[in-house]
Image (cartoon, rainbow, N blue to C red; front, side):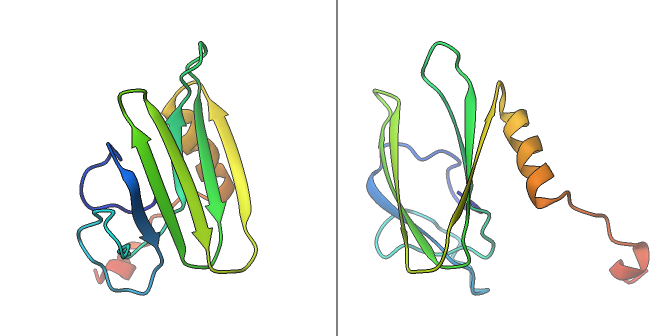
Length: 126
């Protein structure tokens, strides 16, 4: 779920709170302990692999301009995860993606939000 310092995977979390809001003050450790800590950037996209026979990948993009808390419950023994989302207000647009591999999710997401551009050399001060 967006920028994260620490372990890439959310493992064995019993109601960990991961806050997502951007106000240019990064806390380098996102440990899931209350109160949730923010990171500098926020890209509300998360992906997961289905545990059905197809083993397809799914992605969810939550488009909202408001601060959000994600409460994560994981049971890695059963390979199950629950994500509860709390938003303080405003409208939310949700986009769902499906693919056979994680690259499919990233490509579809990039088509939606746009691809990054390389600035001209003069923008780097050369």
